[in-house]
Image (cartoon, each protein chain N blue to C red):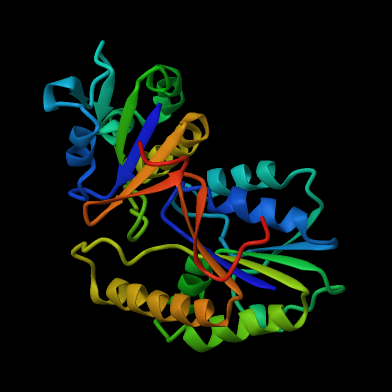
Length: 117
Length: 174
């Protein structure tokens, strides 16, 4: 599994396309039969307490794309705060299982684990 | 040595900080700056306690005035975290706001003098552009100044992303 992270608009899906994943190959925030998924953070925010249950199905994907949402002032709203934290934790676990973790900054992919595919 | 760790919420700063500290010699002192009330803090403190269990830390709860904290002996110190310490030094119970910069920096200097290895956890609070009140904007700015000053003094600085340390300065021991 390849994990791609980065801020909103950092170029994560464009980079995924260079790896051969067309837009229709990538599920948008839903778990379905497709081999790739983006906006994992939407899944976590929908139910932060159920984030742990996402680890196994996401680990079975070829490509997982998640926005980095933990930066900035810590929100006072409990659900948003939990969503940010649980998204981060889930990414930590996914990164442990991933062969490769790529972080996008300004459209530039940086391998922070493994090597760029 | 002094190591500064930064990153967003849930990115693995605490786990990595503890992993670093157990590489350094005992005794290990954990300076907890988070007050045990308010949004989710009990849950967070409980989680951090479980993480530290069995790793040989003695905890000092110190929400302000780290400058005058006297450690029983030299050793390894983990300060967590600068964002809480800064907020505690900036806003008092009466709603007064003052410049936390000198007191936070003096606190860190005091810990440096009393330790062989100091690991500091901070937070990236300046990366959103929310519509915040002026006092929060001031907090974001002073956090930026404090982080920059700490990074200048640190031997190594890393940002944690997905639990992976990305070195920004110097070299990490692990």
